[in-house]
Amino acid sequence: MKKSVVLLSGGLDSAVTAAIAVGKSRCTFVHVNYGQRTEARELRAFNGIARRYGTRSLVAGISHFKKIGGSALTDKSIEVPKGRLKRRGIPVTYVPFRNAHLLSVAVSVAETIGAGEVYIGAVEEDGSGYPDCREAFFKAFEKAVNLGVKKKKIKIKTPLIHKRKAAIVRLGVRLNAPLHLTWSCYKDSGRACGKCDSCLLRLRGFKEAGIEDPIPYRREDDVS
Amino acid sequence: MKKSVVLLSGGLDSAVTAAIAVGKSRCTFVHVNYGQRTEARELRAFNGIARRYGTRSLVAGISHFKKIGGSALTDKSIEVPKGRLKRRGIPVTYVPFRNAHLLSVAVSVAETIGAGEVYIGAVEEDGSGYPDCREAFFKAFEKAVNLGVKKKKIKIKTPLIHKRKAAIVRLGVRLNAPLHLTWSCYKDSGRACGKCDSCLLRLRGFKEAGIEDPIPYRREDDVS
Image (tube, rainbow over all chains, first blue to last red; front, top):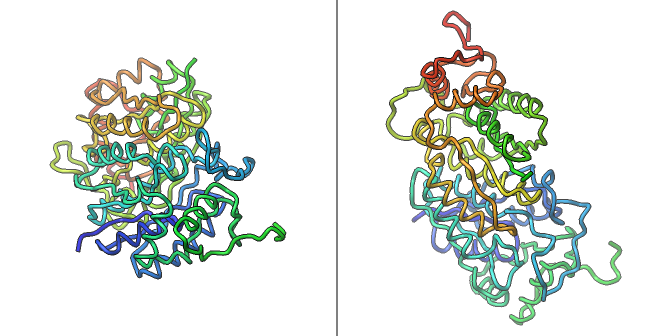
C-alpha cells in the first residue's frame, strides 16, 4: 500500500481529509504546534484522532509565529473577532504564509519516509478566505516541491478544496470520521465559542447538512 | 529605502549575501535554529554579524528536523563524512527540503513587515549539491509565494546562485563583509574541522581567491 503524510490540525476539514487518506494509503499524521491560541486543545484533538486510526504520527513545533505576530491566532494583543459569514478582505486571523510552513514539514517527512502524497484539508471558496488556501497556491507549491527534493514525485492532495462545508460534514459522516473528536474554535478550549469565523463556518455546515454537531458549544449564560 | 529580509545562517555565503543586501535595502536578518549540530556556534556567528551591521533581527526555532531525521546535520547517529570535492549524488548532510522551511519563515516575516525581497545565499554549481539550492527551485518557490500571501510582490533574491566560491570570497572582501565572524563547519564549534564538505568548499574558495581564511582550523595534532 502506498504511503502518505496527512496534515491534521484536529479540525473538521483535516479530520475528513484524514478519513479519505486512510482509505487509500498507509498514513503518517503530522500536526504542527505554531503558537496558536488553542494549541493544547488542537493537539488533544489530533492525538485523539491519531489514536482512533492507529496511525504513526509526528508533532512538530515552530516557535516563530508568536515573534512574527500580525495574526489574531498567534498574537494575544489582537482579539479574535466575532465572525461574519459574508466578509470582505482577508480576516485578521490569517497567519502569514502559514500553510507553506505546514506543507514544508509534511514534505520533509514524506521525503524521509518515502511517501508520495501529502494531504491537506484546505477549503477554498467556502473556507476561511486565506490566500494560502487557494488551489493555485497548492499547485504552485507542488511544483516547487518537485524541484526541491531528492525524490521527485510528491503530490499535494487537497481533496476538499472545492467542497462546501455541508458536503464535507456529510462526507465525514459517510466515512465514519470521528467528528466528535475534532476541534475548530479559534478562541476557546473548553466549549467552542460558536461565534468566531471558524465556529460559524462549521455550524453552518452541520446545519445545511441536517446533522447535529457533536461537540459542545458555549451557552449564552456561560461565564467566559 | 525599501525593506528586505535576509536569511543569515552565519556562514560565508549568507554573510556575503547580507553584505550585498545591506547596501541596497533596510534589512531584517533572520536566523533559523533547526537542531543542526553546530546550532549554538551558528547562532553566535549570526549574532555577531547582526551586531556588526546594526540590523533588526529575528531568531526562529523549529524542532522537528531532529524527529524527522535522515540527515547527518540533525541526526547524531549519522556521522558527518569527510568531504570530497568531486562527489556523486546528494550528500548525507542534506536536510530534507530544509530551504523551504527557511524561506517560509523569511516570507512570513517579509509579509508582516511589508518587505518586498527575501535574500538567501544559496550557491548552485559550486555549492553543496543539495536539490533545494537550485535556481529552478527558488523560481518555483517565488511563484508559490506570490499565490500564497496577501501582498503579492515578494521576490526571492539569490545573488550568489551561479558564483564560484572564490568569487564569493573576493566579493565579500570587496564589500567588507565580516568574514572573520562567519562559521561554515558542519561538525565542530571550537576550531573548524577543515575536512567536512563545507570546510573543503570554503578552504578551496579562499585558496583560489588568494586570500587567507581568517577563522581557526583544527590542527592535525589537536585532540578532538
